[in-house]
Image (cartoon, rainbow, N blue to C red):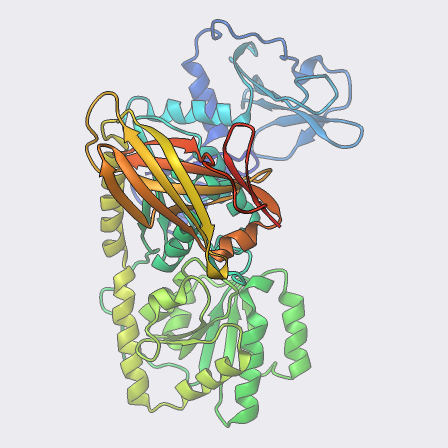
Amino acid sequence: MEILTFDDFRDYAEIRSRLSKEGFLSDGTSVLNLWEDLPTMVEGLDVPDVGQDFVDFAPLATWSGPVKELDGPHTRRARYAVDGTLLQVDHFRTDGSLLLSDRHDAQQHGVHGGRSLILCNDEGLPLRNFGSSWGLYRAWLEFLIGDAAAWFVVDNKNTARFMATFRRDSAVVLYVVHESHLMSHADGFASELTPSAQEVFPHLDRFDGVVYLTEHQAADVHRRYADAGNSFVLPNSRSIDAEADRSRRRTPGRGIQVATLSRRKRVDHSIRAIHRVRSSSDLAVQLDAFGDGSQRDALQGLISQLGVGDFVRLRGHSKQIRSEFQTASFSLLTSTSEAMGLVLVESMAAGCIPIAYDVPYGPAAIIDTGVNGFIVEYGNVEKLAECIESFLALPEDEQLTLRVAAMERARDFSDHSIVSRWAEVMREAWERKHRAPVALTVSITSTDYCVRSGGRLGIQVLAQVSSPDTALPETPSFFCAMRARQQQDFFRVEASEAVVTGEGAYRLQFDFDPAVTRSLRPSTVDFTLEARCAGSHATTRMPLHGDPVSLQVYATRHGSMSMVLS
């Protein structure tokens, strides 16, 4: 297992040492960094690529202007435009020889535009020229895997943009969605995507597999982009003690919250809830919040304002969170969103009862409310306080029953259980990727549409699917995509009805939820039909047959159906 990193500003020797010391790097697990590995990669490049030109090669040694030395684990020098725009960075080996010259002004010297990354041998002579950083990244990944089979698990949304473009027969690329993909949930599944999701999610079908942490999030994504067959649901896991101490003494009334002190985590809700409990009962409730972040000063001010400093404390980071859970009575989760919330499993494994807002997407996938924890109304501080008070008022034997159930539930998320499921997903993704391809064509002989009550758009299609090489090995799946012009995002639905009407002929029905058209207003949208079969797919623009019955629908000059959403 190799953990791959691409940044050039961290000291990975120090990081490896720290991770090993803290027990995070097990035998067989290593951390590789592109910039550390490049000199080794270059050793195998004996001569320049035939046909490549190096007219953009102008290392900073030939530059007479000002050059700045950059901080970092290896020597880097940079030049900038007058306005501060970065124009070039040269990277050097430990012996001082030029390793790579990275120009950001390849089109016109001194003007930002165009990229040229030129790898050099140990004499500083150019060997390879890449027109983008992604080209360099791909070359490194190919160097690492050679001819061997490899599985890439991508858990970084920025790296995911690049890895969606890495397509090799011997490499399976799996993307893990670690956080909510929506800015808010005001419009349900059709709510606005986060900026990072806007860049990655329209390309989810490019991955060999997309892994969601909960069924709920997978379902919401599939209502937006119908599942193309590459989706899996696997929760995060943790190590579970062989036999947790169920009778360990806890501090009565003590709650803890483990969270970044940010607006998204809403630790202020927890502080206000504890204040309410103290004000309305004689329960000796207290709260320790572990973590740090931009809201620390504001939260400390709230603690002072409410006068709760004697029983609410901001404890900063701690490496002993497990033992904190083992001595606390309950834990709180008050985020605006989560992809899963592994902290809930951590809490339950220690017998610390979780009390969480009903946020998308984690708590409801983990907690059976009233059985092994509690879920309260999203964002309702009053209900949160009432739940804390009700739990602490329970007899000790009933609390113990909850704690035992919580520990048992946590075992469902053990490393042993989840890792074996990962093996199944990796095997299935490999087999799916290597199915024999099918030459597929799809054409449309007729279309019709209607807008039903409530704004639900229905599209009916008569389609013909064929393969010139062989009979189709299975019945195709059909999808219709609605894409707004000038936007990357789109919505895709699977056929709600697919009836065989002849050899390779199908009558199809597609239905778009009114939330879809609302979210895309105002815009002009186009429609595409897609057929998928045995890992292959074919697409075609949806034509408009007959005269439109609505001013909102029209035929383009190529005869395709478009709709104006106003």
